[in-house]
Length: 265
Ligand SMILES: N#Cc1c(-c2ccc3cc[nH]c3c2)n[nH]c1N
Image (tube, rainbow, N blue to C red; front, side, top):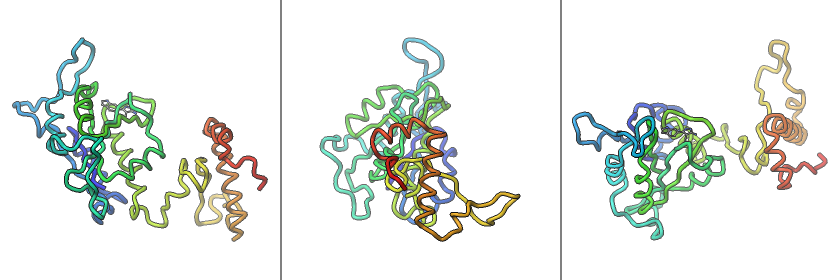
């Protein structure tokens, strides 16, 4: 997967050189490219913002630098989304003439979920537009949508100072789902919100050595070697955690008949 990130704070993404994502980049699984939006300004102050039409507080990011940046990164006049992307190369990287999906983090976006991360992880090429100030001139997304799919995404109901933190969250969540990024030891199968193994339940408690620590014991079932009993215990604990911390999830699962609540184990 190729990921392009356009931002006025490229250094914000130094963490993407570390840990699993850093290793995936070194292994060629991820091709992450950072672009400083100010590279597409032409005035002596590298201006990227201006006052909002209609008045109001703060500043809005100007469309011109964004338009030039997206043209340069993606290529102006690529195939329109309904013409689809050209086939990717055998290793899944975008082929010549490929069309990326533009992801625009914004508080007014649609919710970012694990299922959406799974869907994005199947894309060969993502481009992230990191806004600042009061946001990016709305014509930027409208212009981009003429050439590629555009998704406005929110990572939660709170207000950040810019799109960089959200982009880090989305890139990490998506990248860890790519084949080869997580080793067997960190399998994403048992994740909270993952489908399948724990049916979208929250992950229950986890333990490792030592079995006794500061007077606190590891639950004996986990030391029993009885894998069936361990699986039943873990599911029960996941149900308890979900009921305590996210009861609305449990109601939704019960209504969908997915929590296996009617099972007698
Ligand atoms: N995603 C997301 C966001 C943001 C966000 C995103 C972009 C900008 C640009 C200026 N301010 C921003 C806030 N706040 N809260 C979220 N869940």
